[in-house]
Image (cartoon, rainbow, N blue to C red; front, side, top):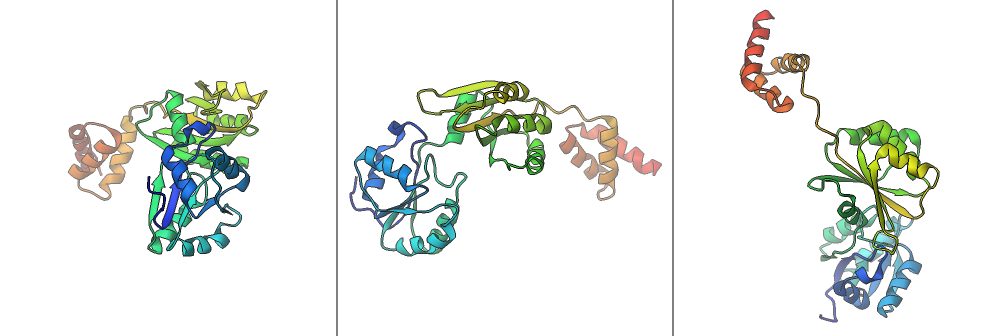
Length: 279
């Protein structure tokens, strides 16, 4: 590898538990940049000791990002600066995207060094559908705001991935039961570490399991998509047709409702004509 790095921002994924997961490319970048923007200097210092490197570190986190970011961007024209989070891939549930946005707007190179990500690792452990998924990060802590956020997720027909802390896990699982129904789910923790586990079951069973014994550490919850929706009724079809006929001719109204409700277009067209005649 080339020892001298071109100026720009290097987004470096770091281990989420097992230091052996740091890629050779990531180690090389971290050992040769001019400085590293970090969430917690103590955490990254441990990683640097692991690879035998010493580099200047700049604290960059939620509380100082707006103040520190302009200085970092100004340096990118002449220096290689790395961005890391405490664990995993930067920009996932942290303020890094603003640095990427401003760096690119200033005309600086932005390079990604991919690697560990807790959300993706949890999906591989959960044994739930992975063809489509939504990462929802941390839900709000307050009950009302959490319920509202879950209500929005309830309409999405895909696997859900959420982050949570151990002490809040049982309450969040119970709130998910209330808002989503009792879906299949997995609680993953200690990912890549010695005691890595993925506990699967219904949301209600998992909520009961962890109510009395909250786990330690950071948690990733993976929730299965909802089951197949019940077939639309004749009443549903009539309601949808009546609304569509206020905007569209019968043929187009029937086609729109057929696509939306998964019903037969010809039968809907016949019904639409009858509704127009009756009206």
